[in-house]
Image: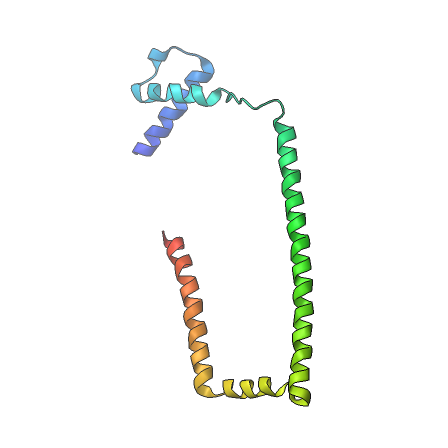
Length: 142
């Protein structure tokens, strides 16, 4: 019999002893060492919750939900303002550049199509993706 099997048998003997209430001298020393643990596990935990615990939890949950709603409204307003500012910036670009307002973007795109820049961009993206995967792999191995 391996040690784990002996431990399991001792724990089971202690559990049977506590259930049946037989004399403690009938147990071997290994089983007797588990009797106090089995008795402690069979007793309900004495929980001292305040009488208004449920009400306080409900109030806290309601306050957190209200705070999230306020944050959501703020974020919506900020996004709306950002959209308006983006529209104003697009209008300003159209006025400044006239009919050729899209030309600077087209010129920049032509510069990015060069093979050396595309390879550099791909290399940067690959290094970035690898560096994000590295901590996950080390956590998984640990």
